Length: 164
Image (cartoon, one colour):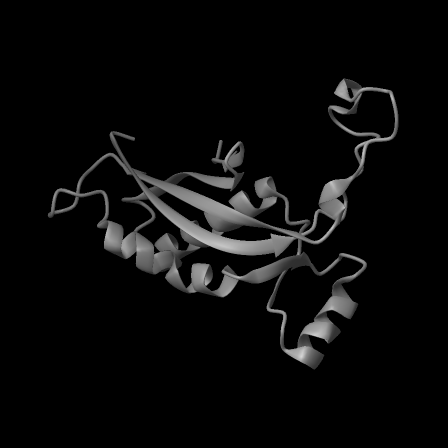
């Protein structure tokens, strides 16, 4: 891509990584063997997320832009507004049904159900797929492409998704 633009969004959301188990899996060999590590991320917790979407094109529009940042913002606005201040939960999570019932009963919990464990990596792909579909629906996918999506979960931890 000759030109790339990046638009940044911020939102607050909770989640839980219900599949986390630090005693095995990729990288477990780096964990010290002094005791069983605590699986903190299986607990309900939240983040101040920062989402970066990178769009690219080999050509510029008649206005000399890849795409106006205003339009990028509007492509994601409804999704960001919906996920902001929600609890992102996998519908396969063992606590999903009970949490959904609590949310419906008390109305004090906004849930955002997904069909994957809401890790930073999986959420980055979710945003990528969403934006790619928006570009496709608008007939822009040939001219503009989603280069990558970066999701910052904390100031020191991010996940990036980009197609091959």
